[in-house]
Image: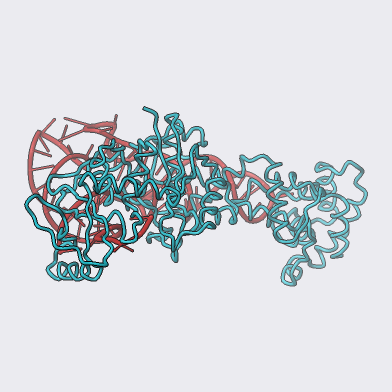
Length: 465
RNA sequence: GUCCCUAUCGUCUAGAGGCCUAGGACAAUACCCUUUCACGGUAUGAACCGGGGUUCGAAUCCCCGUGGGGACGCCA
């Protein structure tokens, strides 16, 4: 049996971090077993689904490089199929028409709630041997209800949570087609999972309660029941549930914030899943190790600090040329054109060990391309008379440094200034940083001088003298 | 209210009855490195929700509480 998994988002918004993790797990499980990963768009909620959201989901998956093998299938395009199956079930007697109005239903539910009972349909229109059904009211379009087994239990061995059992009397005859004939979610899922021959349903654990209903329909259809794996949800950094208005941001926000996709993948993989003490691993390694048995059954809290740490790790590991591209793109977004001088790859090499995000990297690179004038406070504090005298001395020595403009020679010039002025390294290096980059901290100053280049260094130095 | 899921350091987790004096990672703290700030290195503190069982032995199995989450739609 080849493994077939699916990711089935409803396109009512962007791909958020929880959805991305579910997609990652489904994708990885298929990859791990040489199977097929299917993307299915559950867009039957016409009012809330948008093409933009479909695109946003696809963009998010593309950024994370979670490629699907089949699809995207759109449920709206499979209406004919759902209607066909509904008719089959009507004919077979596993579904029936119900003429109860929505208002009437609400009354029943209210009464049940008042009696502290679980609100559920009372089976009034359910055909039973020997039972006389009410006369269908004229002019009312009926809904179609699934004829749920009246007793016994539905059970499955969840690949994450273990055995889960529901008593059938907890389940009522749920609606599979609305009065206007459109099918409902729990029904479409079943038809799709069967038609697409899904073998492993990996999804959020908010679907645990839907699973017994889906299994019952599957069995009524004589279909094979797939294996289920219910992955717990992700909580926000503050331990609160993620929601639209609380912390549930698009995965693309992580792109905007300067995270590398491999860092996000590694972080997400490790959030709620583990392989012993392994913390840092490649996508390939993850695919090799991934299993459902080591998914944690309880909810996990998102931790930005750990993501930052991983991101810093992957930035250190990234090629300078790639980081140069990121610097170009991100500074271009700020209206800064990055040319070849200084070479952004060299700037990246200078800073990649010290930043946690690509945005920090771009910020660090910024003063290499745009002269940043030190603030009044910084000038007052660091560009003292003594410091300026030293910088003047240094300016002369740097102007005399013969080509090539290299670190060792620059370091020598700096040391000569120290000897001439009797100052300590920080007493010159910090004012120099302020003069050149507009900030008192930077990587080793001789390296900065080298990357910045003779012309820029001399010009910026002259500007403060 | 009913049903379902869940519970190890602040956080992510290891843990499948004895390997646990509970391990790793992030974060924290201290020190080292250092040409500033970082990076890095070393070290330290920090947890089995509570109560009952089962067992020679329980973080691990069972039951009951408690906390947290989910569901109970002609939403998905």
